[in-house]
Length: 185
Image 1 (cartoon, rainbow, N blue to C red):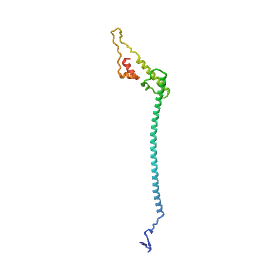
Image 2: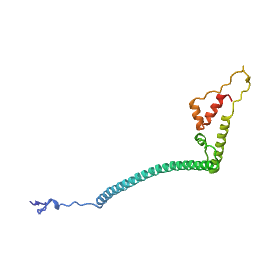
Image 3: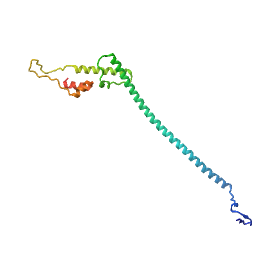
C-alpha cells in the first residue's frame, strides 16, 4: 500500500534517500579500507608465521641431522682406526712367527695416523716381550741363606689362583705385575 508524502504524492519507504556529504563518504571509504587492510595484514601475518614455524622446524631437523652426522663421522673415524690397527697387526703377524699379541696389549694401541699406530704397536709388542721375559725369569733369593745340603729354609714358589693364571694366559699386563709382586721381585 502506497504511503502519502508531505507533498501529497504517493511513495514508498524505499524511495527515501539519505544525502551523504563528502566527509561522510570519505569516512565510510576510509573505514572500509582500514578493515580490508587489517584483514589482508592478518592473512599475510598468518602466512608468514606459518612459514616461520616451518623453517624453524626444518632448522631444528637440520641441526639434529648435523649432530647425527658428526657422531657418525666420529664412529667412522674410530672404525677406520681400528681397521688400520688390525691391518697392521695382521701384517706384522705374517712377518713374525711368535705368538699373537694378546687382546689386553692390543687395547693399549692408539694413534691418529699410520706412523703413530705403528709406533704404538711396536711399543705394545715390546711391553708384551718384556712381560714374557719377566714371567719366565727364575726367582732370585737375595738375603736368604741358601743351604742345598739341608738346614736352610725351604723356598716355595707361591701358588697362583685360577683367576690370575687365566688373566696371565690372556696376556693381561696387570696380571704379570701381580704375579711378580707375589714372587717378591
